[in-house]
Length: 209
Ligand code: ADP
Ligand code: ZN
Image 1 (cartoon, protein in one colour):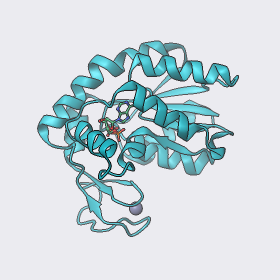
Image 2 (cartoon, rainbow, N blue to C red):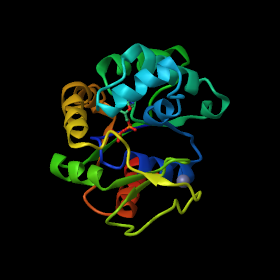
Image 3 (cartoon, rainbow, N blue to C red):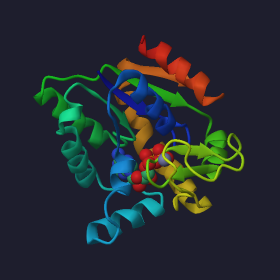
Image 4 (tube, protein in one colour):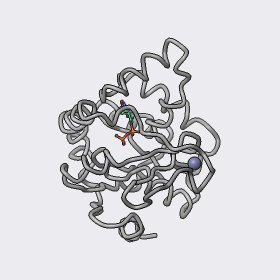
Protein backbone atom coordinates (compact mmCIF):
# COMPACT_ATOMS: atom_id res chain seq x y z
CA UNK A 1 0.00 0.00 0.00
CA UNK A 2 1.06 3.55 -0.69
CA UNK A 3 -0.37 6.11 1.71
CA UNK A 4 0.24 9.85 1.75
CA UNK A 5 -0.02 11.78 5.00
CA UNK A 6 -0.86 15.44 4.56
CA UNK A 7 -1.87 18.33 6.79
CA UNK A 8 -0.47 21.58 8.18
CA UNK A 9 2.71 21.70 10.27
CA UNK A 10 1.78 20.66 13.81
CA UNK A 11 -1.08 18.37 12.75
CA UNK A 12 0.81 15.36 14.06
CA UNK A 13 1.63 13.58 10.80
CA UNK A 14 4.88 12.27 12.23
CA UNK A 15 3.23 10.78 15.30
CA UNK A 16 0.50 9.16 13.21
CA UNK A 17 3.09 7.86 10.76
CA UNK A 18 4.93 6.14 13.61
CA UNK A 19 1.70 4.48 14.77
CA UNK A 20 0.70 3.51 11.24
CA UNK A 21 4.15 2.10 10.59
CA UNK A 22 3.65 -0.29 13.49
CA UNK A 23 0.11 -1.19 12.42
CA UNK A 24 0.83 -1.78 8.73
CA UNK A 25 4.50 -2.78 8.62
CA UNK A 26 5.03 -0.18 5.91
CA UNK A 27 8.14 1.99 6.19
CA UNK A 28 7.66 5.60 7.30
CA UNK A 29 9.35 7.89 4.78
CA UNK A 30 9.60 11.50 5.95
CA UNK A 31 11.39 14.05 3.79
CA UNK A 32 11.83 16.23 6.90
CA UNK A 33 13.68 13.34 8.59
CA UNK A 34 15.72 12.70 5.42
CA UNK A 35 16.81 16.34 5.38
CA UNK A 36 17.60 16.38 9.10
CA UNK A 37 19.81 13.33 8.53
CA UNK A 38 22.03 15.15 6.01
CA UNK A 39 25.30 15.99 7.74
CA UNK A 40 25.17 19.76 8.50
CA UNK A 41 28.95 19.90 8.18
CA UNK A 42 28.80 19.27 4.44
CA UNK A 43 28.03 22.22 2.12
CA UNK A 44 24.72 20.64 1.11
CA UNK A 45 23.78 19.90 4.71
CA UNK A 46 24.60 23.44 5.81
CA UNK A 47 22.40 24.86 3.07
CA UNK A 48 19.51 22.54 3.87
CA UNK A 49 19.69 23.25 7.63
CA UNK A 50 19.55 26.97 6.95
CA UNK A 51 16.49 26.66 4.71
CA UNK A 52 14.74 24.46 7.26
CA UNK A 53 15.55 26.71 10.20
CA UNK A 54 13.91 29.60 8.34
CA UNK A 55 10.76 27.57 7.73
CA UNK A 56 11.14 27.65 3.97
CA UNK A 57 10.79 24.70 1.64
CA UNK A 58 13.84 23.00 0.21
CA UNK A 59 13.87 23.27 -3.59
CA UNK A 60 11.91 20.67 -5.54
CA UNK A 61 14.77 19.17 -7.55
CA UNK A 62 16.79 18.33 -4.45
CA UNK A 63 13.74 17.09 -2.53
CA UNK A 64 12.64 14.87 -5.41
CA UNK A 65 16.11 13.43 -5.78
CA UNK A 66 16.44 12.60 -2.10
CA UNK A 67 12.98 11.06 -2.03
CA UNK A 68 13.59 8.92 -5.12
CA UNK A 69 16.81 7.59 -3.56
CA UNK A 70 14.89 6.56 -0.47
CA UNK A 71 12.01 4.97 -2.37
CA UNK A 72 14.44 2.85 -4.36
CA UNK A 73 15.47 1.00 -1.22
CA UNK A 74 14.24 -2.52 -0.80
CA UNK A 75 11.94 -1.94 2.16
CA UNK A 76 9.79 0.39 0.04
CA UNK A 77 9.02 -2.28 -2.56
CA UNK A 78 5.88 -3.39 -0.69
CA UNK A 79 4.66 0.19 -0.25
CA UNK A 80 5.32 3.09 2.09
CA UNK A 81 3.86 5.86 4.21
CA UNK A 82 4.87 9.25 2.85
CA UNK A 83 5.05 11.99 5.46
CA UNK A 84 5.76 15.58 4.41
CA UNK A 85 5.92 14.87 0.70
CA UNK A 86 4.65 16.05 -1.77
CA UNK A 87 4.50 19.63 -0.50
CA UNK A 88 4.27 21.39 -3.87
CA UNK A 89 2.38 20.68 -7.09
CA UNK A 90 5.70 20.09 -8.85
CA UNK A 91 6.55 17.40 -6.30
CA UNK A 92 3.12 15.82 -6.71
CA UNK A 93 3.65 15.63 -10.46
CA UNK A 94 7.10 14.16 -9.96
CA UNK A 95 5.69 11.51 -7.63
CA UNK A 96 2.83 10.71 -10.01
CA UNK A 97 5.32 10.16 -12.85
CA UNK A 98 7.64 8.12 -10.62
CA UNK A 99 4.77 5.85 -9.64
CA UNK A 100 3.35 5.56 -13.14
CA UNK A 101 6.71 4.44 -14.48
CA UNK A 102 6.71 1.62 -11.94
CA UNK A 103 3.03 0.77 -12.40
CA UNK A 104 2.29 1.71 -8.82
CA UNK A 105 -0.45 3.93 -7.49
CA UNK A 106 -1.42 5.84 -4.39
CA UNK A 107 -4.05 4.01 -2.35
CA UNK A 108 -5.09 6.82 -0.05
CA UNK A 109 -4.25 10.36 0.97
CA UNK A 110 -4.95 11.05 4.62
CA UNK A 111 -5.54 14.69 5.36
CA UNK A 112 -4.98 15.51 9.03
CA UNK A 113 -7.14 18.55 9.49
CA UNK A 114 -6.41 21.02 12.28
CA UNK A 115 -7.25 24.73 12.60
CA UNK A 116 -4.19 26.93 12.14
CA UNK A 117 -4.36 28.47 15.65
CA UNK A 118 -4.23 25.01 17.24
CA UNK A 119 -1.46 23.85 14.97
CA UNK A 120 0.67 26.88 15.89
CA UNK A 121 0.24 26.35 19.63
CA UNK A 122 1.10 22.67 19.27
CA UNK A 123 4.31 23.48 17.43
CA UNK A 124 5.54 25.67 20.27
CA UNK A 125 5.08 22.76 22.70
CA UNK A 126 6.87 20.22 20.55
CA UNK A 127 9.92 18.30 21.72
CA UNK A 128 11.70 15.94 19.36
CA UNK A 129 13.96 12.94 20.09
CA UNK A 130 17.38 13.56 18.60
CA UNK A 131 17.96 9.91 17.81
CA UNK A 132 14.66 8.36 16.63
CA UNK A 133 12.69 11.50 15.79
CA UNK A 134 9.71 10.69 18.00
CA UNK A 135 7.64 13.78 18.77
CA UNK A 136 6.45 14.78 22.26
CA UNK A 137 4.02 17.43 23.43
CA UNK A 138 5.09 19.09 26.67
CA UNK A 139 1.48 19.36 27.85
CA UNK A 140 0.77 15.67 27.31
CA UNK A 141 3.97 14.37 28.83
CA UNK A 142 4.94 16.98 31.41
CA UNK A 143 8.48 16.71 32.70
CA UNK A 144 9.55 14.20 30.05
CA UNK A 145 13.35 14.29 29.84
CA UNK A 146 14.30 11.37 27.65
CA UNK A 147 12.69 9.48 24.78
CA UNK A 148 10.57 6.62 26.14
CA UNK A 149 11.16 4.65 22.97
CA UNK A 150 14.94 4.84 22.62
CA UNK A 151 16.30 6.86 25.54
CA UNK A 152 17.48 9.65 23.22
CA UNK A 153 17.71 13.28 24.29
CA UNK A 154 14.80 15.61 23.54
CA UNK A 155 15.35 18.95 21.87
CA UNK A 156 13.38 21.86 20.44
CA UNK A 157 13.71 22.04 16.66
CA UNK A 158 15.20 25.30 15.48
CA UNK A 159 12.30 25.86 13.08
CA UNK A 160 10.00 26.44 16.06
CA UNK A 161 10.78 30.15 16.45
CA UNK A 162 7.72 32.39 15.89
CA UNK A 163 9.20 33.79 12.66
CA UNK A 164 9.96 30.32 11.26
CA UNK A 165 6.51 29.02 12.24
CA UNK A 166 4.88 31.95 10.46
CA UNK A 167 6.92 31.23 7.37
CA UNK A 168 6.07 27.50 7.47
CA UNK A 169 2.34 28.26 7.51
CA UNK A 170 2.72 30.76 4.69
CA UNK A 171 4.55 28.14 2.63
CA UNK A 172 1.88 25.59 3.48
CA UNK A 173 -0.97 27.85 2.37
CA UNK A 174 0.69 28.97 -0.82
CA UNK A 175 2.40 25.79 -2.00
CA UNK A 176 0.97 22.75 -0.19
CA UNK A 177 -2.76 23.47 -0.06
CA UNK A 178 -2.98 23.26 -3.88
CA UNK A 179 -1.66 19.69 -3.56
CA UNK A 180 -4.76 18.75 -1.55
CA UNK A 181 -6.91 19.74 -4.52
CA UNK A 182 -4.67 17.71 -6.81
CA UNK A 183 -5.46 14.59 -4.78
CA UNK A 184 -9.13 15.46 -4.13
CA UNK A 185 -10.33 12.09 -5.46
CA UNK A 186 -8.18 10.14 -2.97
CA UNK A 187 -8.40 12.48 -0.01
CA UNK A 188 -9.73 11.15 3.30
CA UNK A 189 -10.14 13.77 5.97
CA UNK A 190 -9.16 12.88 9.53
CA UNK A 191 -10.06 15.23 12.36
CA UNK A 192 -7.14 15.73 14.75
CA UNK A 193 -8.73 17.85 17.45
CA UNK A 194 -8.27 15.27 20.22
CA UNK A 195 -5.67 12.80 21.48
CA UNK A 196 -3.16 11.05 19.18
CA UNK A 197 -4.90 7.73 20.02
CA UNK A 198 -8.29 9.01 18.84
CA UNK A 199 -6.72 10.42 15.70
CA UNK A 200 -5.05 7.09 15.03
CA UNK A 201 -8.36 5.30 15.47
CA UNK A 202 -9.93 7.65 12.93
CA UNK A 203 -7.04 7.15 10.53
CA UNK A 204 -7.40 3.37 10.71
CA UNK A 205 -11.11 3.66 9.93
CA UNK A 206 -10.45 6.11 7.10
CA UNK A 207 -8.03 3.61 5.57
CA UNK A 208 -10.42 0.71 6.04
CA UNK A 209 -7.77 -1.31 7.90
P1 ADP B 1 6.58 19.59 9.81
O1 ADP B 1 5.70 18.51 9.30
O2 ADP B 1 6.63 19.68 11.29
O3 ADP B 1 6.33 20.92 9.18
P2 ADP B 1 8.88 18.29 8.52
O4 ADP B 1 9.78 17.55 9.41
O5 ADP B 1 7.99 17.53 7.63
O6 ADP B 1 8.08 19.31 9.43
O7 ADP B 1 9.73 19.29 7.60
C1 ADP B 1 10.65 20.20 8.15
C2 ADP B 1 11.26 21.06 7.08
O8 ADP B 1 11.94 20.25 6.11
C3 ADP B 1 10.28 21.88 6.25
O9 ADP B 1 9.91 23.07 6.88
C4 ADP B 1 11.10 22.12 4.98
O10 ADP B 1 12.08 23.10 5.17
C5 ADP B 1 11.81 20.78 4.80
N1 ADP B 1 11.00 19.84 3.99
C6 ADP B 1 10.46 18.67 4.42
N2 ADP B 1 9.78 18.06 3.43
C7 ADP B 1 9.88 18.88 2.36
C8 ADP B 1 9.38 18.83 1.02
N3 ADP B 1 8.61 17.80 0.60
N4 ADP B 1 9.69 19.85 0.18
C9 ADP B 1 10.45 20.88 0.57
N5 ADP B 1 10.94 21.00 1.82
C10 ADP B 1 10.67 20.01 2.71
ZN1 ZN C 1 13.81 8.29 20.53
